[in-house]
Image (cartoon, rainbow, N blue to C red; front, side, top):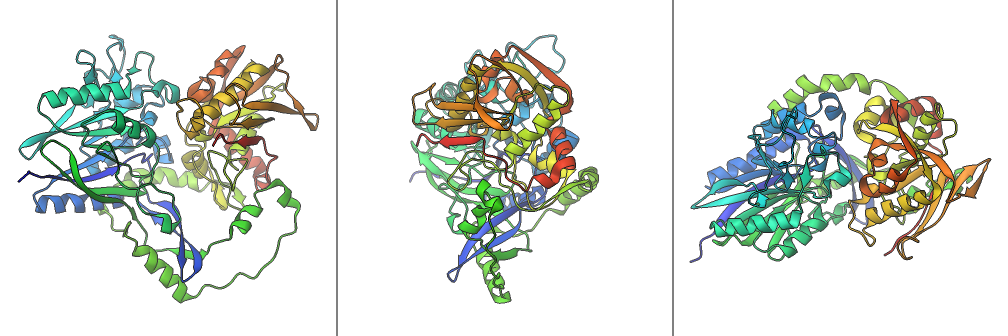
Length: 599
């Protein structure tokens, strides 16, 4: 009989320093009524508990066990802003991963934070297509030859590989990250990233020649590129991915978008585990002797609080009526809110807790105590600094959609804060421009603290840069950024490149030919909108990230000049604006995005 090789696998990705449980909302239909259930999920203490349960179960049944991280541990919350990766390394060590792949946010600030991380971690960091052969010999903080890093082997033209015993075989773990890294992060100039598909193919071929057939690709490419990788490279046993924040599993009955868990292409299953430590991916896998996956049974699992708040789900009409400019002067329709009975609440909670993708709130006491003792006190003071009261939820969505045809409700306010901050020192400023990915979360109703801004909404400590640019290059910037966000005729870097603005508005038609999709850009002057002059010079402000030409913003490099605003960062500008004008934020700004999709 053919021999089976079982593996119990736990996986997470894109945790972004979310050490504590995160808020989450589910939409359920129970007895014909629609309800919203709000609670908290995940966090490192709950992850640790469930990982240990899975690890112990595998040990008790003599199965191989593995726990992998799909990259992007850095950034995301105040924990990273305050501790710059030290807390990430400490707490990940407590979770005991077998390996982690380098994500783009690990290298947002160059190679130095990666080195500090490598010096602290007790598990290997895999970056099999990161080429360090040109790293400067006299460079302080070189990554090359670090014992905890498995990078690119230039002589062999393949990845350095983590090999582990696997019954009577060996299993290989290959870390592959984004080869577009210079477009979306800030690696040092002497650090290069080799084509992900070519590196993977060369590495798999080499392993097969060595008789190693069980091959895990630990990827930080995103689901679309994982699909391409699986299709173009034969012989991959499984891809464990990250970057695209993809929730896999059957969660449509909870009102969440999803794709199938372990989507299989070219006999290779692909598994992802959402984002922000909200879920844990768990899979029981069987491979044959040749490394092919013959069976996989798994899911993503939310780890929920005992406490759940239940309310009636607002109708789509009610939830979107306040999001249009016309609605701010309309008379609200006052209706009596029906009272939810205790029995309904109990039924909704029981239905939620019985879902096959839901686990409980059990947590590792040691991890929880470490977070509370070593790291939480530094955040408490910032949470006590209230900037404003936000009277309603404001939604951040990267791309325009049916319910939000002009896109994000938050990003334009961020642009306005950049504009106001820069206008103080640059009276001739015309506009502010920012990418959607620079805003991380929606703005919830209630008190807005310094911690909310610096830790959740704008966690990237990016300087502001002002520049002077010709109008014709603004057309190029906007179209390129949108094409990159939507993969409209180009290989994009994700929806985070989508542009938002203040002081200008633009019209994009994705169905038109490339280089003709921005049909009009207007500036707001003397109380009215006027078409910009393609030959005229305009002064704008952006973050240092987009001003450096990242994610489709390369035409900003054609500016006549650029100048750093050393006295102001992006989150500081927003904090200053909200502290002075927080009462304005409830009112919708005039739309500045008019978007027609190419689909």
